[in-house]
Image (cartoon, rainbow, N blue to C red; front, top):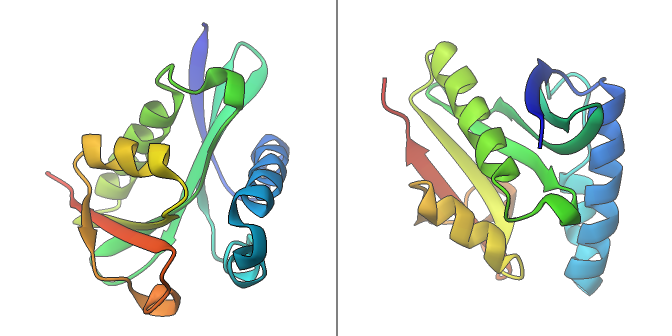
Amino acid sequence: MNIRIIRTDASNADFLGLVKLLDAELALRDGDDHAFYGPLNTIGMTLIKHAVVVYDGDQPVGCGAFKAFSAEAMEIKRMYTLPVYRGKGVATSVITELEYWIKELTFKKSVLETGKKQSEAIALYSKLGYRQIPNYGQYAGVENSVCMEKELQA
């Protein structure tokens, strides 16, 4: 693999292409719950100013983004890796780059939400130091959501 990572925003065509694949996969995974989650995952061009895309050569293979959450935290969103690249460190590279960027912006932690049906995502986030927290915001009381956070070291 010839991996490189770029920083961009939600208007990047490769980011948007990967997010379209993510949305299709989530529609299958979430089943009946997708009607609830779908609107929460729309990309507001004004909300997501920080996104990364991972390439293998010229092929976009993974992405992630973050948006403002609180005075000291950013929320990680739109994490996706092409299925053939899973288990090869792409998602770890995305999270690592997002965390560096969040720290550069002087935020102290990152938060995220994932679904209980995404056990591989939960395992990855746990391995990378995220811990489960009470469901926040629009996810409060949602049985199938798992919210997590990580304190970012300076």
